[in-house]
Amino acid sequence: MTEQSQKIVALVDGSLYSASVCDHAAWVALRTGAPVELIHVLGRREAADTHDHSGAIRLGARSALLEELAALDAQRAKLVSHRGRAILEDAQAILDRAGVPDSATRLRHGDIVEAVAELEGDARVIMIGKRGEAADFAKGHLGSNLERIVRASHKPVFVAARAFRPIAKVLVAYDGGVSAMKAVDHIARSPLFQGLAIHVVTVGAATAEAKKGLEDAEAMLRAAGIEAETSILPGQPETALATLVEEAGFDMLVMGAYGHSRIRSLIIGSTTTAMIRSCKVPVLLMR
Image 1 (cartoon, rainbow, N blue to C red):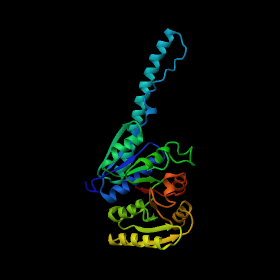
Image 2 (cartoon, rainbow, N blue to C red; image 1 turned 90 degrees about the vertical axis):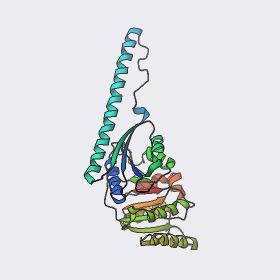
Image 3 (cartoon, rainbow, N blue to C red; image 1 turned 135 degrees about the vertical axis):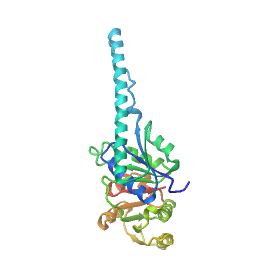
Image 4 (cartoon, rainbow, N blue to C red; image 1 turned 90 degrees about the horizontal axis):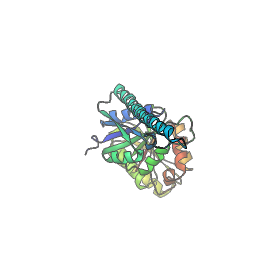
């Protein structure tokens, strides 16, 4: 399967971030020629309520109430399904307006991580909003589904910021780890990054190893026709990267999901939340 034929899996939930997910998916699709599959997952808790709410009611009234509850459950399940389809229709309308030629929608039932695991085999990237439906009520927290998907997915995960803006400058966090090297290789091979300004940065001490790693990354990108800048920043990754993104006006951050330095803790430790939350731009996490 060629990279161009691999689909973009965009997860939409009707939250404030869904439109941004669609806008970013359209941007990726138009630059790569990849088709988009819009997915809305109805969680198990959204299925019909099977609990017995009748309590200690006498037999005749209890039977009538059970029938009424069953009818309400069926109606609720139907409404939830209609809502899911409406979310997908709105999402596809955004792609249509952006001129994406190849898109499809799919309504799934069950756990979102299980759904992604089934769908990601022929995907080039999984796209999800930074926060979910409770975005306005939990601004200090990332969506729980985001963290679960980042941990479980074997494909790159694109975390959309609250609103889309044109992407021209890309910051690449490079620690010399396997996933960081894969990130640079991905940038070199993908049409998504052609013509963009790329800056590769290592956070930490300016050791000979760090300098050599940046030289290798720069050479790989140069061979692909991408002229990248490189630099080494002092400090801790979670604060230095976010500050650089803000002050230098970067439009996207690319980083490995795993590494052999402190950047490893950004994804598999509690610093995940601080890093992604502090960046007001989309983050592409490479595995």
